[in-house]
Image 1 (cartoon, one colour):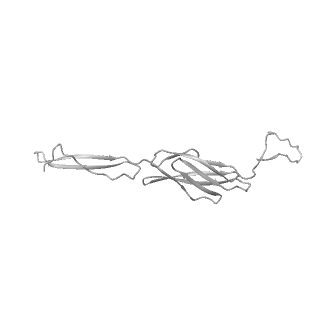
Image 2 (cartoon, one colour):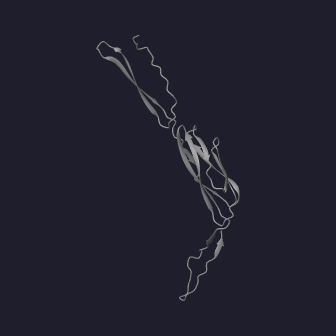
Length: 173
């Protein structure tokens, strides 16, 4: 049959799993209009993408004191379809690392730090949307049991011309 101006062109597209939009060009060719050339229509179909799995961390550094405890931090999804999970690669002193994707809360549980020095670990959140994955690092910094610093509240130290020592007070921090 000869198509008329009232005919419809129907087509179906699959869901776009990509973050970016995509485009398809459809060419429809009909019978000649009497000039010997066929009628042609070119249609461009653009399908929006999902967007990027972007999240905004409220902090990239989570400081915790030397005691065993659970600390929390938050994030906001820029696209509600993004799925956020905690990658479980962590040092043994971090006993739990989880994400509540519904609330945007990150929970980290640490053992007591019995060392004099602080310790740091970098954990990772995975944000997925369609077939795109982004990794977000989070640093956990735990205090040690005793850090020492010099109290240099006295700006000038006096020393004799002869070899002598200068005393500075060591204050536990």
